[in-house]
Structures are given as C-alpha cells and as structure tokens.
Length: 118
Length: 117
Image 1: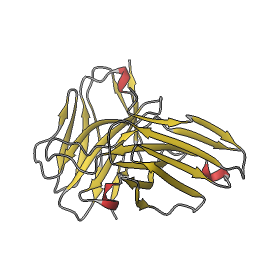
Image 2: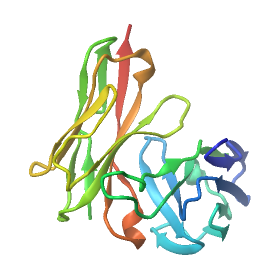
Image 3: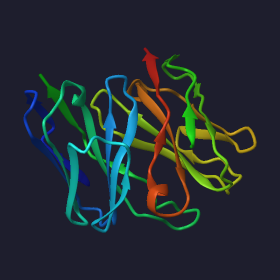
Image 4: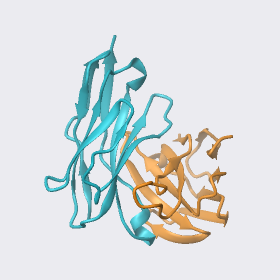
C-alpha cells in the first residue's frame, strides 16, 4: 500500500540522452511536487501541479518538463541530460490545505530516484 | 524570500540521551507552517513533526518535541531517549499559508545526527 511511488529508483545514463521519471500517489491528494536533492543533500522545489494545473515552476532549465496526466500522476521528462543533472529527484504530494490544528497539509515523499549522468 | 538556516551540520548523541537540533528561519509572514523531516540512509524523507505558527503550544510526537519561539523565529527539535534508529539527516522546512506557489517547502541544509551506542 505504497503512498507515493516513483520509478525507477535508480537511473544511470549518458550525457545527451533523454529520460523520464514517473510518480504516482494513492493518497487522494490534489497537489504533487518535484524536488531536487543535490550532492550536498540540499533540497529545492522544481515544479508543482494542483489538480493537473502547473502552479509552481521554479528557475529550472527548460530541458526539464513535467507532465500530469491526472491528479494522481506526475512525471518528469529530462532532455539532453548533462553531468550537472546528477542528483536525487523526489516526488511528493499533499492536500493544498488541511484542517486548522489537525494538519492535513503535510507533504509525503516518494522514495526518490537517484539519477547518475556519465 | 524565506530562508531556513540549520547552523549545525553535524551532531552526535549517546543512545538514550537527549539531543536538540537548531533551526532558524526568516519570514515577514505572521502565519505559516514549520516541519522537521528525517532522511535515514535509505533516502526516504519521513515527516517527524509539524507546527502551525498560530499555535503557541509546542508540538510533540512521542519522543520528538519542538521548541517554537515565534518572536525569535526559532524552531528547534528535541529528541529524547535517542535510539540507534534516530540516526539520520534532519531537515527543517517552512511553508507559507495560502495557495499556489505558497505550497512549496523551503528546506534548511540539514543536520546529520549520529547516535552512538
């Protein structure tokens, strides 16, 4: 009963290739995210979708393109991979808001995809 | 822009002892959310505890509790009776209220906690 799943968990590829990472959540959340964790473990938001609509698009090279076919799925496609794209990519999901004092707005993370570009 | 600072890159604690991890943040907002996430070697990001800024009462979850000082913009995590399984990277995170781009989490750089047997 995995809540947020990502495939693949590991991805090794060569520079210049195009690759995709898939994410699915079964929590019934409306909002999904992509975060990047660099080699120093720093986590930064890349994109967010709310009910299939793009709501956050941080300063990310346009080689990265998210797609949300429905509110339970968010995929990340990366064109022309570069060495600097090597990182761990996390998918997450949440309700956009919760019940005051009772939470419900927390973000739940997938297991991450370690991308290595050689 | 909001920033989150964790001033302790590494901390260590003896098993069964108590340790406190520090976090400060910068915001001009009056209401917001704060979180602590744990990332063990498995890489999974696990929510440890959350705090709504409008609540004066400090959040607690079993052995984990926070000391939320709103005026000082400080949000420290206390782990009591430390266990070997608590060894992990701990991240403090901030989220604004409201919709749209406010949903994103802003993370600190993390504190690596070692638990010694």
